[in-house]
View 1 (tube, each protein chain N blue to C red):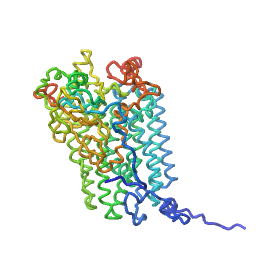
View 2 (view 1 turned 60 degrees about the horizontal axis):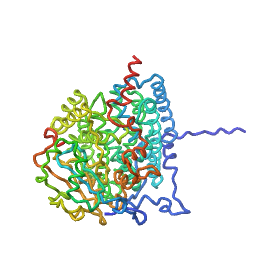
View 3 (view 1 turned 180 degrees about the vertical axis):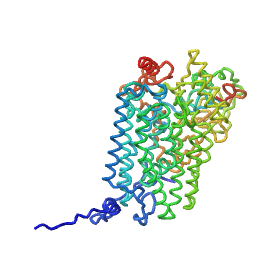
View 4 (view 1 turned 90 degrees about the horizontal axis):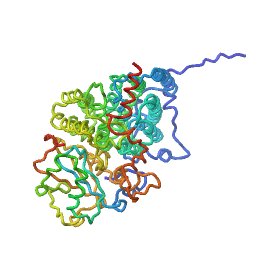
Length: 514
Length: 118
């Protein structure tokens, strides 16, 4: 006998509840604190996980559907770009160095974020937070893959990309992004969300993503632009998670406020220091330019970020301690960083160059308070020297900041003529820093930062040579041995753009194509 | 402050003096930021301070046109930011330099390429 069963389809709201909150339960065989051992020790007090507002009401099945659609569109563009030799349409081969920096220094962070969110998601006993972290974890893995695919076409034609993962774990400046994320991933889950979701994704992400993607658009790189569009909707979800997480912690218990404030101070500054690489890319590596770093900082940090911290004031949160110093740095850091890579270009797998006259004029116009006075003369000097066959390569190793691991290139706030030096003593040793804020981060957690893997110190300890290399052998060349350990091809991956294989090939292909 | 952790958190310091062939010394030349950052060098503690000036610094800074113009009798030294008077005849150790000390020097009248402090 047939009975008519009414298959009731769940409404959106119910379905959402069933597929997120409905997935959790109170454990009985083991106490919850043993099942979730990591969501209390940081001192964050949560009284009611149900107060977590899901930042993006997305269920897993809808997630797969949306992402699958985006993927199909993205790969259609990537394939077309590759098949039509799209790389010949970029503004200039110098542009590819921005992509080298991206695949070397940014894409591996997506992978770290994937791992970090998977771990944070496992750690939270609240289902809402767990599901949001799980989705972000998958997003980040997807970004790592799609970036690799979008950029892979360039790897066939240009140097400096073939060994990005190997370099990430070894090359001196890549320890800056690497140590940033290792610091975040080895913190507890709440600090991780404050660092990556809030400080990085919510406060600073526009300063990372927009310069790369608008740089790609200005310079004819449609492959990367399409990746950018494909990631954009994920990024907005990530930003929402960042702000939700902060508000949730602040609303749950007043005692959380000082803990969160210290994390915001720390992670704003760490993120800002990391963005030095982006500032340099934006002002120096894009043959066709849009916003300067200073303009981007004023728009995305000073006005948007300023409004955010006004909004958070009602919870007792003030703007991060390093805020004023970061704003002061907008006139200088991109120039100081480019000079650094110009110095150490023998040990970096991308090219540097002296800007053209037109580009110097752009820099003077965009940086009226600083460029002509402090930076133009040295770039003009470099050009004279290069034309005389005496291109400057700094062959001696720099002093690094123990916290951000960047060479000590930053100047005193308010005095761009003086390198800033700070130091702390801890258990009989001296530790050095580029700023008050990097020093304070160390002073708060010295046990963590005494473990910093500082590339310069590691080279001197003999850890950056291939097995079997004898540093005491006669005629030992340490730089050559370190580059061999990096697996960086001297004369192809490194040195000045002028005279490089990239430059020559691109010129030849362009002429041939025309 | 200490690290928040679920267990006692204690790991050896990465950069103690015993791990290096010689103690590290950091050296900076004020107002010459063409050299983008101070240098880090392992130097034998027995090296005379004068040898540091005569044998080591030219290899670090000789490229800069100001370097040849330095009047070493006028140079001002700083250690950890404080004015400091090293004795060139004495060794680095006898001058009180220890592992990971930071010293700087200032060369009056010299302010880099076209006065740019670089």
